[in-house]
Length: 470
Ligand code: HEM
Image (tube, rainbow, N blue to C red; front, top):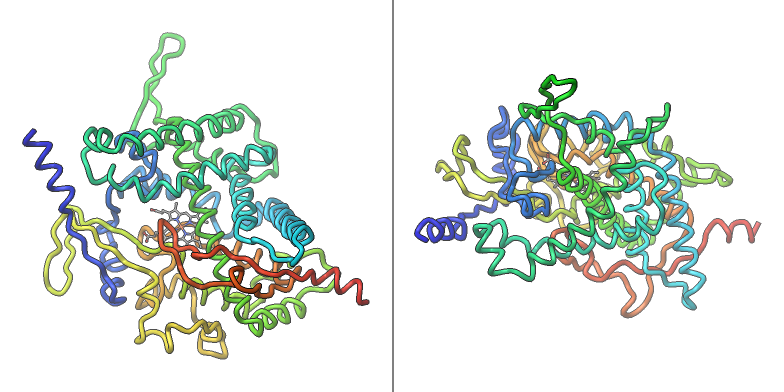
């Protein structure tokens, strides 16, 4: 009883330091993580870690070490490497066509043409990530069911904190309802994911086809862990493969991280463009100058040339980063000094990207939405997100985190945002609706920072109008 009580007291009284100064953030996250120090997060609340009592991890929850390195190398070198993203171009095109058709349908079926864009954007993004995760051919009904389950899990995340704070047995008894909800949701996920994972295990790779994320996970070997198999009376030692529970958790992380933060950011960007029709028009002019009017879409090769649109995306990431906090935990081996004092092991250190990117010493009028600051003509020619996150000097913004554990999905996230926004602005004129349906830029901060009032807008079909008027 004494041990349980002292564990309880220790966990509940875990000290927290919030870093709001960007120079300290740079000192800790970038310089401090050199050599692998200060590269751990606090005990995670992700389902795999909680349910397996921290035996199973995904990338986000894995302690810094060989397993994390192997998982990180796998995702960055194969699936999310910027030079390999072109392999998923047809999945992106399908997702975009589905989204445009969904918005057009909504527009027709509503008397005032006001669409609820939020849900359609999220569904399109989830479908695209499901395709990258499990390959082609997953039916739409299953994708919808997986998206609903993922959403339920994200809603439940804040309630799961107790399972990382309290000793497992006690938390399960005290919060039985939450525990049961988590178990049921996870079972549902396993029933949906495992047949897809098995199907990938037994199929032969077709030449030229892009790898599904799950293929790379099935092939991954866990460093330093071995399993024994017997064949023909001989024992063989092999490096361990990931267990089904680990695979489900990692697919869920890929779908969740890849969908929620991007879909929420696309809404923030569109919301700013609805509020500022002059900026929306500037984006459109730039696109119309770069893409011929009979082209089916704004193709991916063109995206890098759209300087103003890229500036709009960067400015939205600065002002409305969708991940509200970056976390680290001081471990025994770390030597973390702030204001001349050593931070004790066990301390949780929180870095809020939204606050850090509104620092007057880095930005003029930091609370203004002003994409011009990222244009070459506005002094932004050297601005890259990696540099802004401290890779080449001070941190000025860090929507994707910073240092060793910085988001591995940054390149694909930027590609998805710029591609979807470019095409949505080309297809429709986005006008503000009235009253309750108007755009409200108030945030709701939960696991992700989303718009408190989901994005709605009055859409005018542009390209059909063009055809009619010509
Ligand atoms: C706008 C979109 C996104 C934002 C704002 C975002 C932001 C972040 C942030 C702030 C972190 C924590 C970094 C740190 O601790 O220093 C993170 C980690 C992570 N993100 Fe993203 N992310 C986005 C998109 C994505 C995408 C598209 C994927 C994958 C498909 C992804 C996968 C991950 C993973 C796996 C981690 C954990 C990395 C690790 O611990 O090594 N994210 N992200």
